[in-house]
Amino acid sequence: MNQFNLSYPSEIKSESKLIEDVTWIMIKEGITTDKIKRVLLVLTEIFNNALIHGNNCDINKQITVLLIVKPDEVRADISDEGENGPQKIRIRPQLDPESIGGRGIDLIEHFAESVSYVELESGGLKVSVVIKLEYEKKVIKQ
Amino acid sequence: MNITKNEMEQVTVFTLNGRLDLASGGDLKDAVKSFMSTDKNMIHLNLEEVDFINSSGLGVLVSIMKEVRLQKGRLTLSNLATYVQEIFEITQLSHIFEIYEDEEEALRSYHILSMV
Image (cartoon, rainbow over all chains, first blue to last red; front, side, top):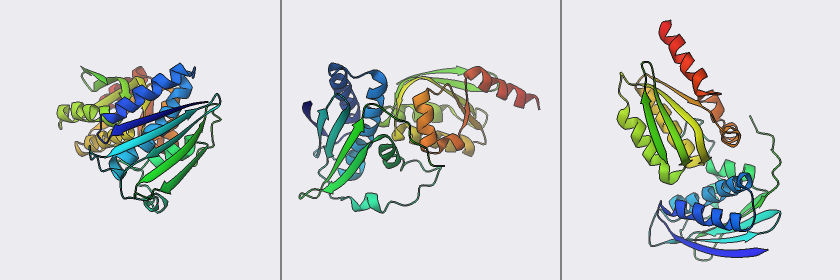
């Protein structure tokens, strides 16, 4: 098991930096490309929520990522410095199929083994996720 | 992301290469929207070389679809990788977009429709 601590300013180009860093870590840990994509998908969804909804793209606010890589799974805690707790996620409205946004949570919950949301004492949100590396395709709700 | 454009008689094909995400989505949106007009409103996107897409990228595609609709045009997609196709199904976007197996099949549909 290897643990990595990453931190990014809240700006759009940080998403690319996260992707590069996580890809490098996964390759170094011997994880294959197809598995890396699913890990990246889940992590970028959580990261972008933290960036946009948590930290409001305030470059002075950080997003921290704790990544734990095991042979069969990846665990991550992604925390922002915002003021929007988990309530907004729990009460999110039904998605209009033609809306521009709002699909991130569904993708996270589909590809992750588990996901939990905790409000930090500082007011920010910590999202903890477990992603199994051996992926079994789930039934897609219609 | 690299975007190449090929203007044909009935349709303009944008071939995408790379990631379609928050950072790159804006480039695609700008490239397509700045090109479109009421007489250039048939757009095909070839996603064969798109090796990563997330919900931000999907949002850009929806935004383009709405713009095409506003211009009374048509938007088609093709060559979705298995992983990308799955993401479309999970998010129900496979019901919203007109998706073809390959570019040739998509372009044939434009040719056929133009003959009607």
